[in-house]
Image 1 (cartoon, rainbow, N blue to C red):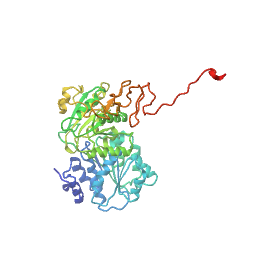
Image 2: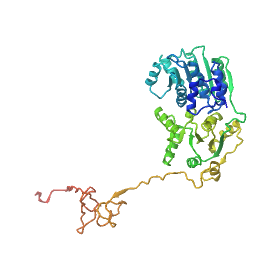
Image 3: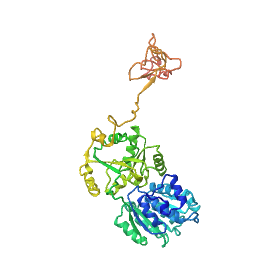
Image 4: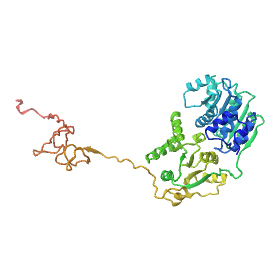
Length: 479
């Protein structure tokens, strides 16, 4: 294995990485860092979860020096808010032993805090295209001195329609700069973008010799499941042996919220990240998941690029993705940093045509997914689910209408709870509201009364007011 010291990385950065247990470089880092440090433009292509952030982040931090001048010197553009937070955290960690300041610029958060950090002289900006253009248009973000520019997850920017925004950003940065573009896939439009805005870039594609189109350390399981049985199947998978943090992907925001409510009701520690949540709520969910306070995260595809958690053991596709690229990015949330993982995909009967395209593109060799139900023996065997496992780990609370019965009871206890049904007696002969020998209701000492329709008292023991009768015609004594 190649260490960061072998790649010419500064000692303070090496020490910072060592504090996190990071000593050896991944293949993409091993190939890009030696080229990025002297300022070579790079197109880096590697599957998600292989360390691209440090591949471009270390050269950016080291090239700025130990004490860079105040003002934006480096710009890192990412497609989603979640990815902005993740890249910000990594860059902030790399600059731990330097005076370099990092700021995250993205939507859904108040402008004031971000503007204050820019005015304080932050040198590295990590941001999403929309908010970057917004602040630059207000002359609150000056990119004229940003000589280090990085485009991360460029293919996702293409999918989200951000290429026009990227062109606007490039118009604001210096013509002479060091540019790095990193992506998991390389569509034709991304190659065209690179040719326009990069100077003689070197294309680096880091793969393992034994690796196919999918990561070799991820086990892929595909089931044809009924939509009404999916929640039960997922609940049983979440009780599999060795199951750690799990990410579940849904197609829509509504489905994500419905699933998290269902799993919480079944007793699982689950949170959601989707577009209907506020940015603060999304960040709280992500922080709880990363910290291990919650071990199940339900997310939509927009959040997929920002889920960078090393110890995710399972990814579950509640609904099949639209294409093979989305599948790779979803599955890439597990098996990160050299670990192994399991990706489970449910295919509805109506989505078999989508699976046929994905199966052909990724060469799975499984044109017909296995028909699977929550009781299928092969489900238990494939995922090491203990025999007899059911889809609920807590009992649903029972809702009963009860009343507190005052006074003595047949067992000598007072205040015992009894189920009260309409029209039934309220307890033993000594309970309040029982009738004495005269047939009139008797009141207990604390004023708790009853009214069964035949007495003169309400349930609270107060006497009903006498009703005046209306008489028709003249009174007998009117004459």
